[in-house]
Length: 204
Image (cartoon, rainbow, N blue to C red; front, side, top):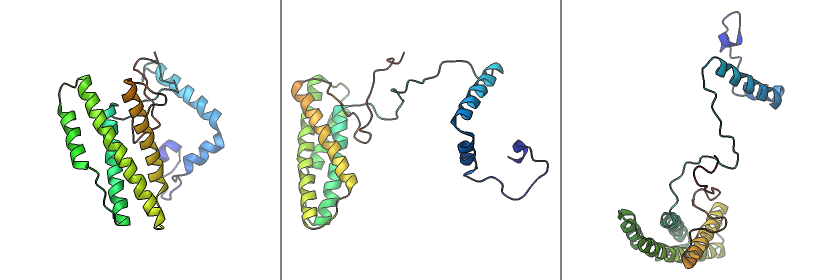
């Protein structure tokens, strides 16, 4: 760093800290860094360090690391989260709930292990998961009411996630009844409900 900054002699004391670049950026301003980026990019192309190829700057589409959206898998993610919270909340209030978690897990694993999944198999598995999720949502809501009645505080994070779980359940039930694959503001990831997928190649 000393060589890069052009110091005439070696110094032992620390002259840069974690906030130095932040302070410099604030002083120099956004316009300076835009111009710096443009000129740096130009020099790199001229010296053939990088190739002048197109850049993905379409702001409405952005790569996101997540598993391939699957209705049955999505419902299973919701179910597993619900069961974890039903158990932890049930323990806190001293109540047990029959969640049918083992049976539900067994049915989901049987579905996921099948090599060929026909439309009929998908619909059957989806119906099963919808029934479990519906039951578990009701159980968690009841546990929350009991906890609040006993003067226990329920985290806002749980309430927010429960709202997402209810929305997913409603969307999936609607699609199941109508036998369609699309619905307005469809959630495809329980852990990242803000993600909305787009078909590959749409940008180009």
